Image (cartoon, rainbow, N blue to C red; front, side):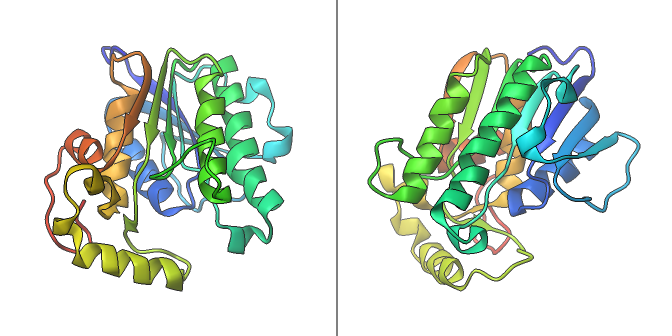
Length: 232
């Protein structure tokens, strides 16, 4: 996608770890002139480039994202937070699908989605199957370019406690240099690196469906790996 002219981005998922980083970067990036953030509750940010649209995703209208050039989605929850598998699927699949459909109807030509390492629509694991189904759904909406990001454990300051994930992240961080070859995709990566990679991918001239794991995310983010809690 050419960036000779300023780009308007539609965005969903601003309250999550990657979402917060992505929104901050969008507002600070001169390539983007306007950010339309779709959210279920106020984000708590004021910025001249930000247009906040507080809506129910169930009732999100196709006209809501008219005029957007690219769309980025970091929607996601956990089964624990959602309360049930159906409630989890509602957010991680159905709302993602609705946002993608409205973004495409509004004119967006590129879509960037935060998924998860191991996502597979045929997986026996409910979480990974839901993520894979969301990827497949977005790929069939009709965007000329679709960018799927599959990070493993995310590094960054979370607002909510996730004890199990914290333990797994600490373990993965401790053995990260042993994760080589195909296993490198399971290395922890910073939310900031994922967000930077998303912004770059959304403006890429590449067409079709692109999938990014750890190494591709770090390369696209423009940052090299450093073994700290905030590194990619």
